[in-house]
Length: 271
View 1 (cartoon, rainbow, N blue to C red):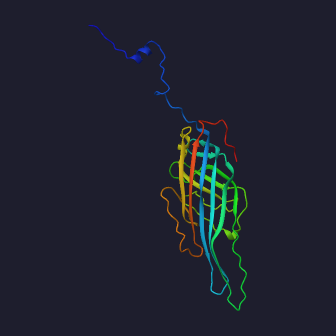
View 2: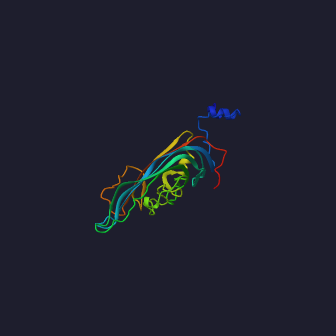
């Protein structure tokens, strides 16, 4: 009786001691993402937010004023920065600063005065003097402050040069935005800033392919004292029949992040 042993092609190579070469497009293991990953990216942020507020102490035969104030803050910031991630839980970036890329423009949409009736002498009243300012726009990436779910990314925006509006020409009260960590402010001075959650996970940044993009449209709406930052279909703001002290916010931003290289030898500066 003859014993026949069949040896596959791969086994035969192993028996003969020949090296097994797997083509680059085959089943070779993918390169691992380093724990500390830094790469260059193009970031473009375009859009703005508008606060519309109303003041009304108009009176019959007494000094008073009534006005509707519109505060526009707009940015168009585009350029390259470094993005640094530590595993899937920490992210930061170098600042991206672009001259003339941030604007604050406040204006009175309506203005009326009431005053003393004869024989009383009228009182001198002055309308707020609103202005327009253009300065350097600043952008940077940071950790989203929300604790639940995967670690995500937020973006910070600011106007860091230029003048400041008179306090009479701003809504002037503080806001507490939703979700946690979001911040919505007018660029009425160089200390104000806006922070928007992007609903992009740090893992998505780490695994983003070279020349690939992540694009998000972020919207802002609701009352100025408690603005809501959200994604999805736009919720229109109602500025009709406003009463004294009312203020509504309306905003849209489009954020694009494009990875430019696989890895950068440069690090993100501290501070």
